[in-house]
Length: 199
Ligand code: GLN
Image (tube, rainbow, N blue to C red; front, side, top):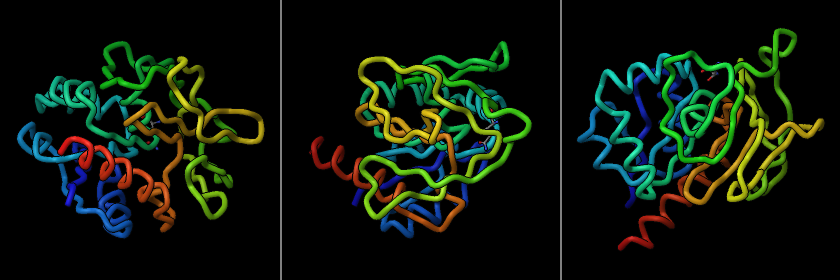
């Protein structure tokens, strides 16, 4: 049974653990390199990416995270987690580090004051049964993507809010806050597929 970790440095860790478990996955928190080494996939929660970046450095996790993502560990980032998986960020802090892995440029806090928080129905490629309720909280958007990146969801105006590049998945919004486990089920399936393939 593959185990999915939730990076537990900062952010809405409990909500992701609950959503993963409701989707039928084994879920554990990850704070230390040994814990990271023991999981088959990793969720990077919503929260504050500048703080998460600092704590990842302080806990000695940034390099191990980069190495595992580079080596093919499936990862899913929501909101701040999307920022952490971006190769490039705009409107980040000067010293802000990311794990990277997805060939995209993400703009932090992109939606501006009028739209700091909002909800929108979002249809996601690979998620059946109709749109999910997208909860956006000081969310980033995807400003540009490289050739290997698949756009999974856009808003009505074309803004890209969900992407996948192979084993990596990211959403601008927070499915962990809605009680709808379909995005977590999709990710759990990616983790199962990757662990089955490596055995
Ligand atoms: N604005 C936050 C950041 O830049 C992300 C917000 C969130 O995760 N809800 O990290």
